[in-house]
Amino acid sequence: MYTQIYILRFPKDTSDQPFIYRLVKEYDIEFNILKADILLQREGLMIIELKGSSKANVQAGLDYLQHLGVKVERMATGIRRDDENCFQCGACTGVCSSGALYVKRPEMAVIFEAEKCTGCGLCVPICPVQAMEVSLNDDRIFSDEFML
Image (cartoon, rainbow, N blue to C red; front, side):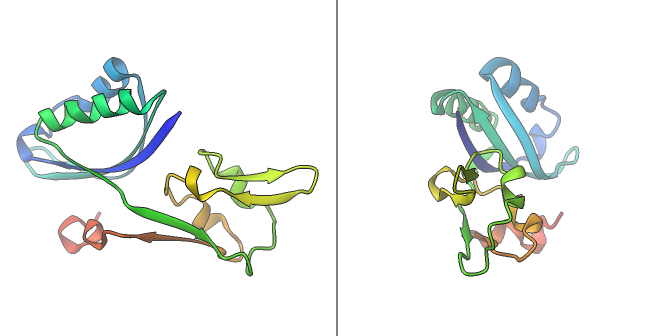
């Protein structure tokens, strides 16, 4: 399974297009909308996690969006774990859909494989000791222009 988070910037003339329906139906892509600000006849912004059986079908869906005039950017995020603060409770493993965080048995150690991480950030608020941290490499995503 290929999973990645993207920033989609919509021109105002595409805000009425059924693009999510087409991503699912024609390109076999699952989605999770993380943030969205889309109104008719106004430029829009969406932060979306896309999951497909291969990178090729996700890329085909992204090509379709770009053909509509949507600007597509891969969200550059990094999740890191502070191993000194982490006390191995495992709370983060229950919300990690990518499998980057899991409990290794029989040791019962909480493992974090950063290369599997999609950067969704769900593990950050769930961690009771704030050992998980997300950093965005593109601060303009959350500028006043696109504040949701």
